[in-house]
Image 1 (cartoon, one colour):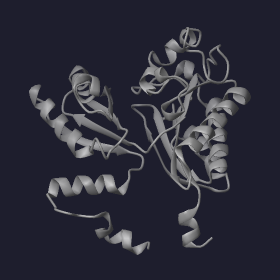
Image 2 (spheres, rainbow, N blue to C red):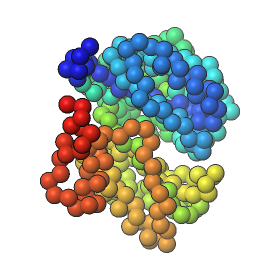
Image 3 (cartoon, rainbow, N blue to C red):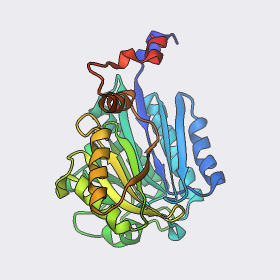
Length: 305
């Protein structure tokens, strides 16, 4: 395949989150299932022991991506036991969430249909309850992952039986070992965390609330406050679901100002997984106050033409 053919290929991205971030052997078993699938390229994976969570990013031909995601989910259901899972990050299942992101030559509608295909396989073949979310949601109440996951794993046994919360695929009885999975199509997002020089998690929760649209913050920012026990730091953990409309630098500066109210400063920040180049270019140009800077002025972008 030549370079032009690669550029024009149908490419789907998948970023599943698994509820294991401490046992490297288990994580490798899951990731190996992705490596094995022809037509798929593993781009990145990282684990956080405090969150007890791993995020994997891979791309490829759409059908191959669906096969890889299913295979990874199957192994996750075998090696992860949700009845004993503990971690700071909200979760409801072994493969907690599995977003599909159209990259090239594939529409969002096509990604939605592929998410339904994956969800049906997970439900039928693995006996795991599946909620469709984001653009794939079967009802407005299921669009927001936070609403779907509210109550976390511990509440799912009852939630699956509640009116309006029957799963889109799979059983209404909780698979106690594997929990529940959310699967859906969505645009690319930026997973961005800010650590504060305090162990008071209530401060992080108050700041997170102020970042969310409902708290008077940003429309495209989803935020929660967590305590990183191993570092004894409070964290504002976020998903920026449209970085073009809610830029990273603007959220960072807002958190800095909110933290000052409580006599707290920022220790550092972190990006989880991969991030679009344009997002980081926007950050650099804003802080450096560079006028009319374009991504194609980055040397490396010209080397791949």
